[in-house]
Length: 266
Image: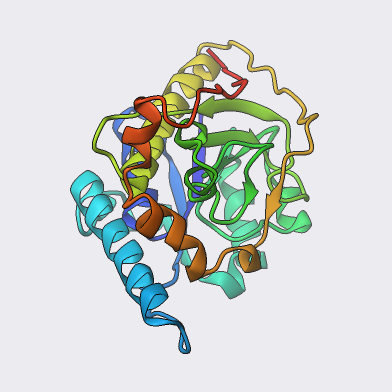
């Protein structure tokens, strides 16, 4: 069974690739060069928001370094890795490369939207790994919003069919990590990535044994979060109101308890 993974270039993306490779489920990689991991705060912010912005992304870097290491390198045949950027992710070069491999499974995680033309060359098993629980948290920054709404147990990952509509494909599986006392927002996000990587391996084992996976259409409308929905001012809730201890407060019962209706492939 040939598996091709489209990934971004951040440590969390490479962690997923390494996990698949370790279990024998990775034949080739298309890696998109992503933006800098520690962005500079935008100009014109109030000092409070500037400090929160710096803290937020510094905390993300620290959490991902703890969980995934500062830098990772895939130990694969260089010819099995195609390096791309945003502008040629959907190019003829990529399509021809995929056509030559003829994969049985294509997974995407951390890359920009796949074009309809490239999508047409993918096999039946073509899935996206989305950092957020769909359909409730689709779009961008979707591991942040559950904390903003004081629902950290809704922070997770969705494996869904790739379609021309963003994060709208039928759901294969939801991966949700265990909440650990003392964890902040980014710790939970890292645990979600690790849980998703483990769960993908389990799903691929099913396919390798000839077992089927039943996609479940997304019936609830949920919410599609756009890039412009998030601003540094939203960080006030996480850091100034709760000092990033939302997990502990949730575990103490302060926010009530409402479990997401998860879809599982196994």
